[in-house]
Length: 155
Image (tube, rainbow, N blue to C red; front, side, top):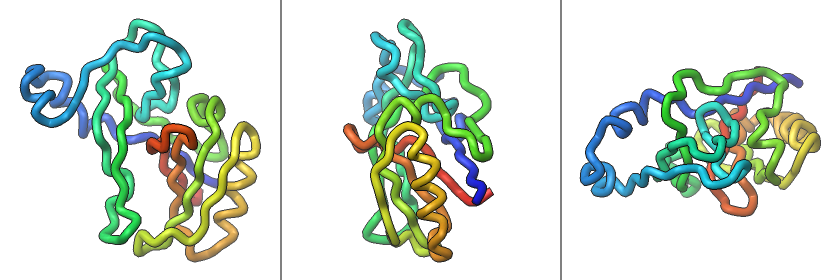
């Protein structure tokens, strides 16, 4: 079964780059510089930022459904990204580099199944989760830090 992985859209963050430090601080947004690579996974392109690149560290709502599984967590977004990762049957570098918690949700935002995977096993777990016809999307989270990585849908 084919699957599609997408990064977050950069449109939601464009104004934050132009905002003052005080405005960003009031919103809980931090401007950071990557000090290691890997270590700062950009949620738009799903690549790790290079050492010295600027990013924003902010809270992102990844599960927007009005359910007990509504979820927010910190993510990094890199300055200058214009197109999100959007590919079929291809695992992005930042996902491959980290163990993933894969959480399958139904149309009402209720978790139906979940599993852990890393490396090439991630694709196998995605395919297994999608064998459940009630699962409409899978949210990939970095297993160690728990932060949202990407959305996975059927292709």
